[in-house]
Image 1: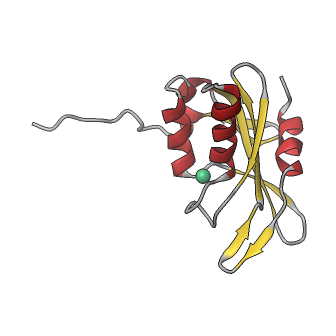
Image 2: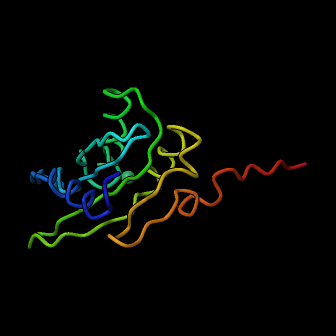
Image 3: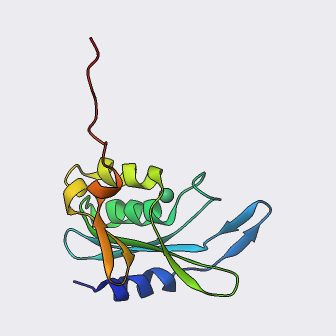
Length: 135
Ligand SMILES: [Zn+2]
């Protein structure tokens, strides 16, 4: 499987920013490794979490092209105006989308936060199954 560093570079390689009236699109790039070991990429389409984040675009490509739902590893990167690269965590919407895509992802998806740091999706979505019945 690709190393964290290789996936960070892959995610960074798809970034291509375009200025819009209200912000940028294409300034966040994502790379993921599917359950079958294929790499899918995506860029954000829309400003902040209002449109489609890079993670959800990559997940949509995995589902559309690969008919796959399990994510082994995923990383998102962002470049500032000086070209400095950052690894950024998924927003709440994307964390939920990863879990909803396949329930197994809560324990199988490794979210890369740096070349030497990653966490399981469960750690970023700790109360996903908290449905406490009220009497
Ligand atoms: Zn997101």
